[in-house]
Image (tube, rainbow, N blue to C red; front, top):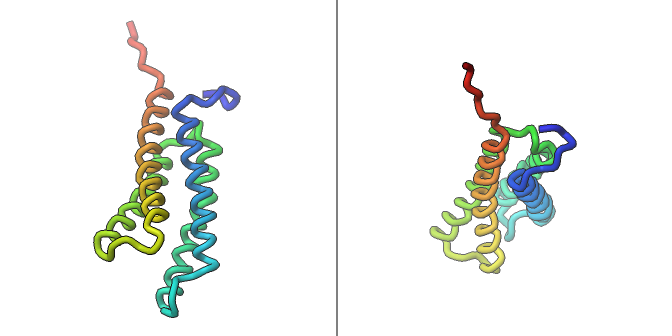
Length: 139
């Protein structure tokens, strides 16, 4: 597909999802990096801020993939994996420890993460199928 050609609907959906994920990463992990872990547990705070920094480190990759979506292939699937795993981590935490303070906020984040992961995979699969040129039969 030519660089100037308009994005397909599926590519636009993937781009929007990747940009939304970028915004969630920067806002959520940025806040966690500044606030740290609640309470006075030094070890938890150390791990919490480290993981927030790692999470923020992914943001440029999501942003870049969104900007170059026309040429992206398998990378987009790899980007959907940590979103999905993060949602599973939230579900595991809820299952083991119950709902956190502000349950609506965390349930919304978890639902958004699950939805984003599935929409990214589905829309990107559609985009890749539409990019393929069918083989022509040689006579």
